[in-house]
Length: 330
Image (cartoon, rainbow, N blue to C red; front, side):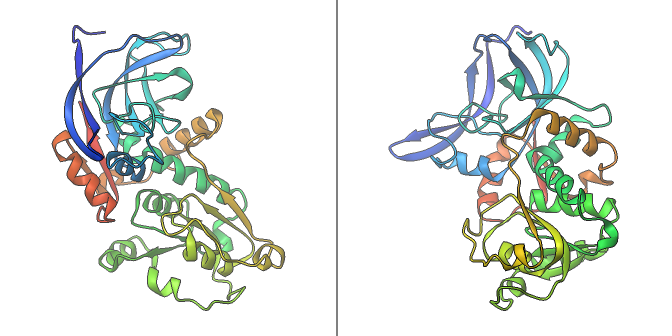
């Protein structure tokens, strides 16, 4: 491994019912059976990380804690027969960064069954530009494209400037789908138009008529926000269309009739990246490394260091981050 006895980590601590964060030195812990120690090269910022960093007990129950639900790096110590020292690997979701210390650290210790080998055509940096957001986008695209083909018509994507939404737009665009982006950020309209993507303002989409069914506009949809946006996507999808949903930042509630599902045969598919089966993870990661790998992946990505982490997490909570933000540790 190495001669170091400690490593740097972004620690969140509870102090008199307030939560404070700082870079601290942490001791290495002994590996248990089937565990790996990974030297982290990159992590990425996700909304769950921002919630964990402010003490949200729905994400992280116990503090002190190291957030970071994504990590990519090199194995430096292994108690596993499946992985060897120097293997380059990705760890996303499961309990990483939630109630297990996560990727905002120079090293992470994880069970072997959380780990995917880094595909050959994907760099570590690219893997974290995708991260959990890319895995979720990939899962959504996989489910949607099993039924809906480019010739069937437009795909609508909500939360299109966020991590999952922006990557969904790019993957669908690469696969030849005509895409419509829903966003509340008017200043991003030109970015989407340059990609050949139509834009609908979030307010206009929320203000559609409150009827059980609306005029069919799309052949399918990828929703990342929930609430009335998801309701209106479902109501405006054409017969036999597919809608995936993976977020509830707008609302976890839906006020719908069964008409879109019965009269139009719409399928609504929930996406859970946290506990996605390993063979599907490997399948999606390989697609992201090959036929789904988007050009200019780094164009809409910001790379930061430990010193910028608190600031960027606060901006994420305020909805002021665009595209992907990744943390460089090596």
